[in-house]
Length: 484
Figure 1 (cartoon, rainbow, N blue to C red):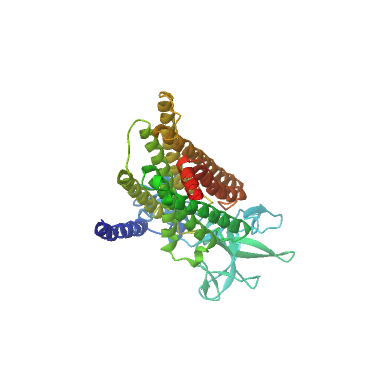
Figure 2 (figure 1 turned 60 degrees about the vertical axis):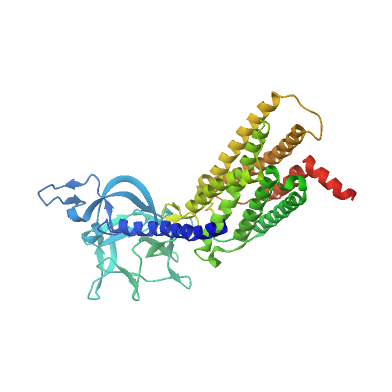
């Protein structure tokens, strides 16, 4: 068995490498399909096509665009991310005439703090601007006679480039480039008038400022980590008691509970590590592997609970499962969980990886955590509830034997203690989902609040109460130890 497992690891890592390379190679292939960069194009859908008159060229705003510079696009670039869009034609206008871009319409300026265009009664129009010719001559140029003028924001958040809190003097050149002392400004820009002093306006190019999710390690994060530690300690106690109890050690139910507590301990320990460590201090590989394994253990723990629910249903139907059967049935479930976790680890949301962007866990600014994390957990809870209902129906059809030593009594006691714990766990994770939804719709860029922290600690206490305090076999074992 060990040699087989050892031989499988190279295959697993080989598949991981192929998946990661597939996304990279695909991006290069896509770039080669288009005649120019997206920023140099304009939507020409509905523009006049000359047909055979001008070799199939298009005419857009009195500019003739050759057919070889026109191609259909099925995406747009927003905030630096590639977003699927309805198929439309775009032409490489900036390959024919230099382009100049303005953030806002005439009479408006871009407010750098509110990140939006606002009216200003004294804001200058953008019909003319100072331009430098190739021979060094500077003049006020009527822009539309020389440039292709575009009014749009390349990104939702724009910023000015300053030095020592002072605006720089950027010069627009006749070829459309913007230069300050031989420093070339990015193509992803737009001009806005900036009020300097009380009456002087200066045209400043603004660059895209992607909204970064900054790492925060405050009271809330430390509280969450402490609550995770409390839960881990509680799960360790449950694991230790089930290891010592001879009646539970080798039973199917006992092995399943031990596997569950192990998954929760490892998953919560990794989650605490990700909470307390800045993603900037982790390597790219670690920032993808660690959350993938965290996802693996936490999702797997719920499917072990659904597995226990299935086993209890079979017990009341006279089917006995051994410890060996547990591992044989659990094996395929583990493989599916591994496949899911690595699928998520190499998946993209837009143009960014789900793991490995601004955060080494799910980005709280989007709903990937709902699709990749909470959805599988919800499915596992639904499976558990389904078998619980079937078990209750089966129990209602049989007479109850009131004897502490009977098999029926022990199984009913296990069912009662297990479902107390499962109910608490499901309620706790329901709070997690609601807390995330509450934070998301309020615009708070975090998975955490103090309700999440308290419920995490309560998860551990629920395990102690239900799996130890309400399990008759465990209680009998503890009494025997106390009486010795």
